[in-house]
Image (cartoon, rainbow, N blue to C red; front, side, top):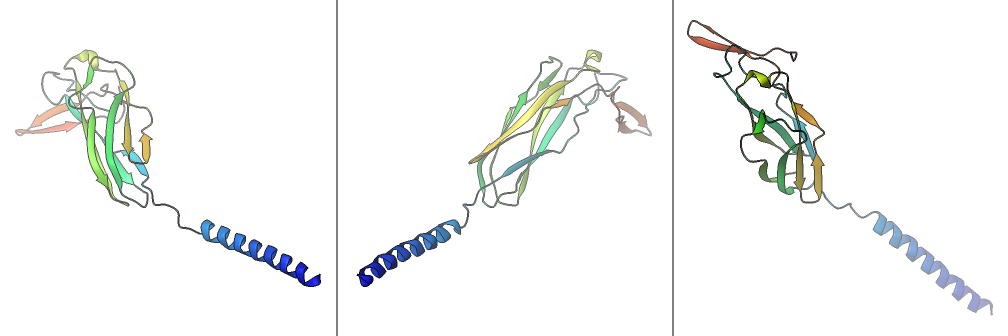
Length: 173
């Protein structure tokens, strides 16, 4: 009888040891690689028309973001979408609201730009329009927090010796 009991105990110990080993092996498995996208602004949100004459000078401005893949796998099918959050007929998107980057390797970054137009009128001064840029890729999605472009800053253009120089104030007026 003592012998039979030791076999039962031996089988139970063997099952317990196998269970522990299986748990350790499965728990120690390497995590699956995955892309992680981050989005950072790379252009100013303060834009402006020439205060001397709105009919001349720039009225189209880039809005850009840097897309970085901080994960350990390539992000594929990366698409950035520009989305307006508020309404302002004086500030519009000049081109497509979608930019396709394709793939971004692990540890790499790519820049994406959208063009904003401001109506050539003094009524645009002191106004703003909110937006965000949503970025999607396989297994990852990130939306830029609410931001706004503000054409309230008047850009002053001066001409000296045939060369033009443009300055933009640091504060919105």
